[in-house]
Length: 464
Image (tube, rainbow, N blue to C red; front, side):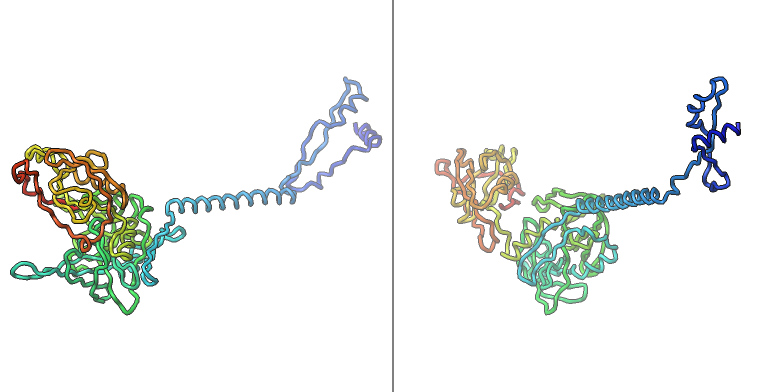
């Protein structure tokens, strides 16, 4: 065998002699059928054929530096792309949860209300930091009313307000300053100012005051109430129970959004929160975790079995009202009919032989209703071609129109339906348009004045 092997090597010069001493520790060898088996089989009889084996080195590929470099670059690239994708998706999610807004108020260079969208790249602040930042802009509002009756004793009440501009524009609730003869504003720093009413809006329960100060006043940033979700943290700062508890902080969550409420016979859309709101908090600030005012606290449901039901005017709804009051002194663009009316229910209708609808109690001289021929004593049964049964329905239809629109009104007058056409006018402060009630004058054919059996609270009507 050894002799054959040497002869084969000399003739073919292809056999390798492997020196096992030259193998490294990580290399190993195996045996396998030699590729020269076929050649040998041709030279040897099948009976005496041999299978010849030789060692073969199995190399470790990872020892190859080129292979290692390629694999490392691929892995590194994949990791970098993964990190970049994760960061991009996080930024996109943050933007979708905190959309930007473009809220602004123009009222002179020093009267610009600073509005900031929920910070896309900012971080939530601690409760203590929020209080330190916002509380200087929340003020106490002390109102003194004129004395009435023989005693002539004046009364005082208090509420809260939020400074909007560095030159002293302040927002509060209309019901806080309603009927006040003297209004005093006090800051947490101990400053005291006499305030003037810029304008007030009973429909939204908002009012704007103005104070004069030699130095710039601390003012609040306004956020975006449309970005709120149920479960977001909410903080309230106000002055409950007069000045003894000035700048009180309460903390809770947004309990509901777009909550429809009837407050003082007015339908309002509110934010609901379980942050404690008490008498005196009215007009104060409801704040998000970025230190931005997102609501004007205005009401609380009370009762021995009620707890944690507070409400605030969303700042996005308040801003257009505030802008209009600062610029014009009132809310512009609102259509007005010029009537005070009372709901005629089925029981009232049956007792007085009237149709169900809205009884016209008085008409404003020169108003749309006056010019259109509507008279006191009429009962409105259709408004803009739609059957109506109460004042709220008429208000809802009216608010779908704009100033200058023509509306057909059907009234029942002395048992007959009469059609009138009115052109909606712009609602202005009561000092500019005074209500002049007119007496009901029935037709002579009815033989004298009409007599109605109205309940005692029938005339607690809502003006529109």
